[in-house]
Length: 237
Image (cartoon, rainbow, N blue to C red; front, side):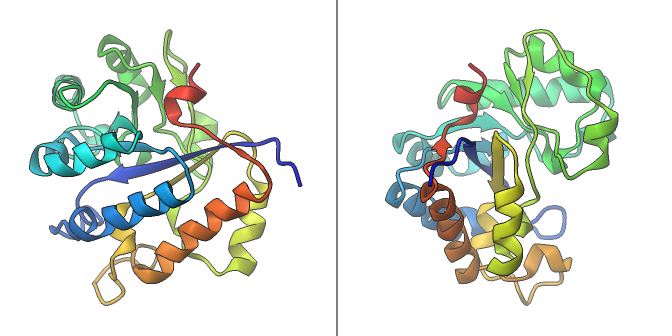
């Protein structure tokens, strides 16, 4: 079966399930599992990373880059941009740019919590970003706010990451329904067992081993249909 869709696999690299936890098990335990799956399936991904994580875990950054994946910005501190004033937002964007670009070129940006005010789009252009992936098709804001910025391509996320962990009878029809480009995203903390943590259900259910297998299954689903996997910067060309 031939699938004409393009798929972009992305990863938001941050502390464990912010703002609920203050640990980094996802970086220390889950990230390697994800990189291994991507290597096994020959998929290159875009990793949106907070600059604070890059400083704290430079070896993890080097591993991501050495495997040929794209580095993108997820802000400086994982604070919500819609809770910042303009000066603070500009600082977060510029500071994260400088830190992340000390590791590798960075063209793509994704705001924490997929919330980014239209008023700050020009700040991304000024910082040299060419792609913004801060919108989500499953959020009403995507349909209400479609402002564009010169020299900045906006590529929304297709579905929330917790859908990837659903049972196949629910998950596969959703994957099949997504239009191209299909932008999937996950977090490294989903690959650690958080089922006993005090979290929202969508953050903790079927985390750990099940989540690992669900990612492999989702990639296989699209691969079996000959879908094309591209990184975010390739979607922007």
